[in-house]
Image (tube, rainbow, N blue to C red; front, side, top):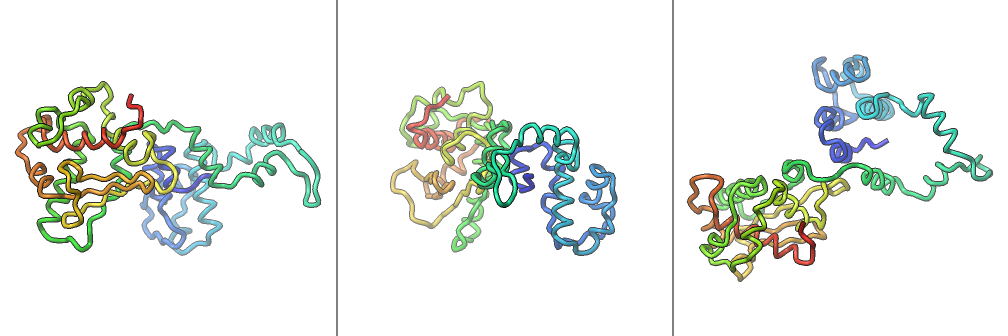
Length: 297
């Protein structure tokens, strides 16, 4: 049974927030509030009040059993679906004996488990779900922002915050990248900027960023899920204007160098989220350049 919080959240994004109090609950956690969400989940799904049991440290077997029953009930409609008559009948018809051994009969399921490691099974199960991007939040939720510990000046932290806001707005389709904005910022004009963002797909920018940073447009499922964005103001900067962003797909890492040029376009005057800005043109250009070799739909 898949009980890993990250996997459950990736496979069932709508239900995962409801189950999160139990997904994040550790065995040593003590709950003394009868109204705690974890206690209420037990009442709702298992029709049992576990307030007393959770008010003191409990053993690992009890913790994992309760976690498994909650997830099974929420996802499959039964706290222990493998004990139902329907599943037992299915298993008897499917899990046929292949051969005998000194340790007992070798069945189809046992043979598969001997050949396939649990992480591989989990990866296979994940492919059975619809992993298409549904919302820009699917991307924003896995971003891990990293600020240089040696660069904590007030000015640097301000530009970090401004960049994060502008970047988030860009993925949410605010701002209009145009050739005019690119020229205004001293960038090379690119035909893709002129028509590439006028799309029927409101998630095109988020998908483009996913492809550039992970080589896939699908929602991240396997660990690590996070996409690390490392910001640096005083680090080693690229020499070419417009090259302040570096994608390291193999490491799921994006490096941002906030150069003097990038500082200027970050503070460019804007009067509405739908204006054409140099920042939007720059960021989209870099995504397009990074995607060379991919087929854009």
